Length: 345
Image 1 (tube, one colour):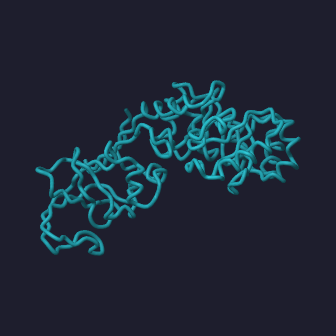
Image 2 (cartoon, helix red, strand yellow):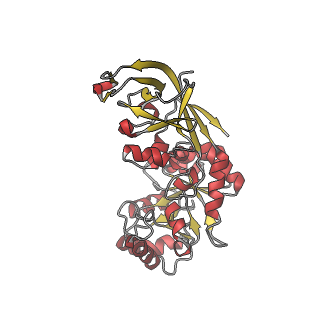
Image 3 (cartoon, one colour):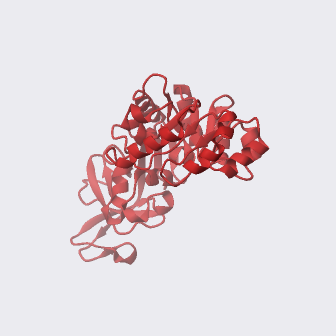
């Protein structure tokens, strides 16, 4: 079969959630961020597994993402929408009992006029300048918003993956100032903030990337294994080129395998000559350019020819592969394509 096999461990996702949950004090709820289709792993399956483990609140980016999660979970559990109440979302928010996190006076007005009795949360901007109400905006609508009883008041840390960054304490102080006297549950920490300790936990933590085995949760259990089938093997002579643009020139005779995957499958072109794949414990370097459907690999050091090579495995995490491309594990995970045969363990 000329397609890669992506094995996803839902048990590992649950294990990571439980590990992050154990870092919080009693009374702090550990939610789960499952936006971007559960960081590429399937939000429906991830949500059901985490719900069975005890998660009660889930975060998605858009109302449309929330629809898939609600279908998987059924009624009862809370699904919060980071993007808030956008124009055109009223029916889906109402019908599927989603909780939008209102980011602006405009969204607050839209929600209160269209769905005056429906639940909502508030997102505050504590310094990241991305989403949420700034202090002046919040001051203008605070009494009205709190009078309607928000389900959550939250903000988001910009530099939580750098524990010593002064921005962390700055944002925490701003958030404390903006929420002084607020009786609603408060939340500031995603994965990085959870790792920063109790000062940042408030009433709820919202881990995302850490659930899926990525940094900054260095102790996370890997959740994915990606194996790529070998389509063809050839002998390349000294001085011969491999791939587009003659990007690789053999300095000696080599055996080269062509595997079935490429940038259309989320193995982004930038991994180029720096990436590695594995045959068991043996490293095999990627050579030449990654193309849309194919990657070429030097297998000269192997005694035989395996059926497939592993690019995500115990020897190479999503963050290791991301380093080859000058990017982050988030991009590798969320880019994993749908041509793979997906297996859930």
